[in-house]
Amino acid sequence: MVDVGGKDVTDRRAVATALVRVAPETARAIREMAMAQPSVEEVGHVLSMYVGPDDVLVVVDVNFHDDTDTGEAAHAIAAIEKQVRARFPMIKRLFIASCSLFFLM
Image (cartoon, rainbow, N blue to C red):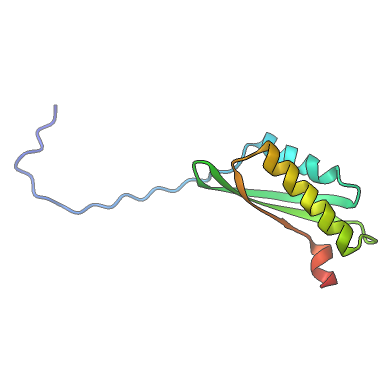
């Protein structure tokens, strides 16, 4: 036992940092779900961050085939979102970014 009596009261601050992301298998599964869409040409980074114990933010870079119109891309994005959310309910914030769509706008 430690005697803490007789000591002055002090203010202290503790700072902790951590890199917390989804498991590599989760990122691979998300990449596979995206690649399963016929209009998806390639999937880049799958970035993630835990916002809370059961609240994960995921950003997925997706590139579509050049001849994909915005309707097809929107359908593919909706399908990816539905599959990811069904399999990984802790992913509450999902952003799918596409350079192809960005340049079309």
